[in-house]
Length: 467
Image (cartoon, rainbow, N blue to C red):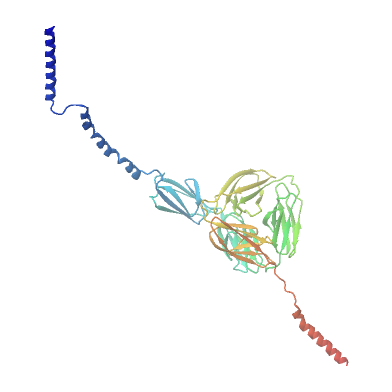
């Protein structure tokens, strides 16, 4: 037992000496857990400098699509053409279109204007940031146009086409779309002259306006049973029944009423100065109708109407534009107005039927024009804007560039009314004109005094002769 204990002591001493010997051989840096820190700490600073600069580089050199913008400045000769950029309506010439410099570089541009062939082009490429690319389209007159030559007596009168284009006579309006157009001729001191002119393709229509000195006019009040019949006076469309037509020269005038499903009604009436003549015929049903009637109203009024590409006229204030004798079948209707998007629709009509079409036109974004609304007492007075005839009161004149305008309201038998009106973009100014009758001179008492004195002297002389 004692021998076994001595043996174990010797083994323990040997083991202790071996461990001490191993520690001495490794040097004075013990291999322990803290040694891991110095081995891994350099990794973190090596990774951080490699990843931190990535974010600012992306922000500066790779902006999101559309972050940079350029522009296309689109114009046409003549102006006011409807512009479609990549098949989207963007306004009327001149117009500026904003695009992304990083977007699709292929662009389709179309410009349409009544009386001219449609212009189209493809542009490859986008503008640089802040750059403007100018594009000008030279529009070509349509093959379906003609001319109107106007002379007048006296010459130098103001002639207006469709209440928009104006000039002094003699003058020839060119590149006019085929169809029926309104011509008005005006000169101070003379009765206004109106006529509807039919324009044929490639031909020139001639108008010889012989103006008559101003006289007191009369009014024609027209009703019908049923109502809604188109009224033509001396061949010119004036509206639908019931309607009051003023400013008519005294004398005989032809009147025609037309309504689909009814026989035309015609008569000759006599107009007297300063009075109103009344008509209220009952229309006779047409047992075998051949045509349809289409009545068109727009908001705002004053829009140009084309049926199957042929000019039909202009919508009015308070009265629709009526097309009678419309052949049964399918027809395309186009309505245009400066400052508004074009409206187009295809409809099928049947004989003997009346069709009412009401259209609200959508204005061009960011309007650059304003308007003037004119009413008068009495109504049916002629309205002239900067000496250009625009129609009869009540009337709204829109699509006017901002600025100052001279408004003249004229009715025979009344003093001319004139004012200057300022037009602001996006607003419609209101004008109310109260017309004053022209006064008729009457004899005064002072004018009779010399006659009284002479009569007294004559009586006195006769009395003295008796004595």
